[in-house]
Length: 180
Image (cartoon, rainbow, N blue to C red):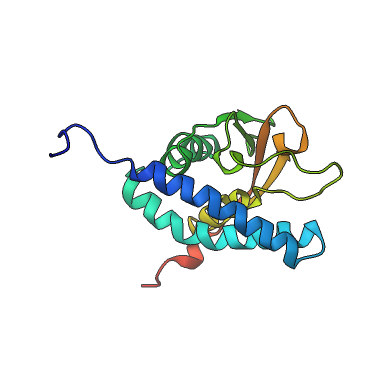
């Protein structure tokens, strides 16, 4: 019996669930390997950075987004296209200052924590720090320096999960151009 033409297999959901379960096992192993939560956070950020530097090429090829002209446009693309494409969610975006270089991504639902209970009180573990590294790495590959951190986390008892993005400065593109 053949599949109906209008239905596609749900590979994305299977891949996402496998990633979420594997990620949980990875974080658990890192917690065993490192004594301090700060070391685990740093390792997750570094790992995410490596993923982000590679993932940006796939994102640009698959999304067909054009050149962005403002930090708010970049943040909207991250929220509305990238998060939707890779995690199946769309965070809301808020601007946090008048110079329009600090933004927050507010995640109503975080698929990485579907199978995780609240972290122990007093824990400084940032369970989803991989996401911060991914965003930072991808932005650096398009010549944008940014500080990306978790501002609030539902796993720590906060009301929302919030990722803060502060664009530091636009990297000098002149040094990357070919001399004629």
